[in-house]
Length: 313
Image 1: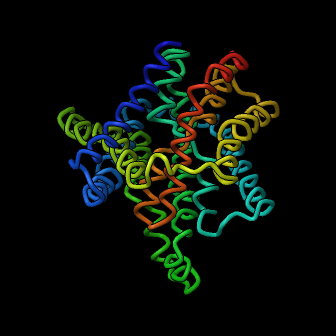
Image 2: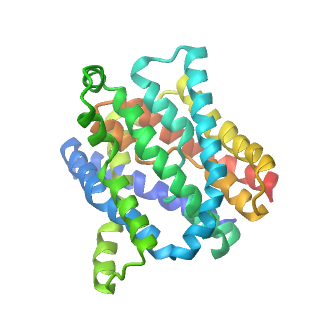
């Protein structure tokens, strides 16, 4: 349990380091924009490619891939519940895409992977990555499309039927890195160790730069201005109640190994995807709402994870 909290504390340290360095004048909004491009267009695609190619063989991928049906169905149901929440509580149109994505998609790699490893050991990694595959695919297709739709300019482009604009936003470098990694595994192509090392240098930038960006965003918004409203409360309900409950519910109808189901539940109950504030910045969506969603979800997670572990273990 101690190692779980240490992993979360390190995330906090990186985020508040970004906040502090912005306060000291080392970082600013311009540097935040540069960091965003580095993460989204270079570091994150390399990270996704390496995560897939390092952790799966062709046989393992094909055998375990059957288990993706549980997170796929549960996440689609969670998206549906988020749309229902939007209608019931009449959320602001400028926040609806961010809300649904934050409600549904979790931080499966930067927080989820080390926490599952700390709880279950290495035997949990393939199952954690299965949830990551589904989470990543839906985040970088449905999620990124919804976030981009919060921007009125994108909405106008969509209404004017410019499919290339939408496709360019959906097939982001991050998703392409993921798809190339899957293709590499399935075709069993060799990859020189020197190339893997080079890609690892770039991939390792993902977590610190992402946390720095979040720190910059939180400083720009103002940490005292992180608002708690019905949208934020809805995100927290989705992350920590609806999402894990739906995974458990689907697991009662589709038989999978108990360890796989436990890992899926933990992966589904992670804080908000840490790329959401970065994407909000890139697409000129509601950065304050994105930063507040992430900030509150991480803060609450420190109190939530012991309760979740007591229920499922």
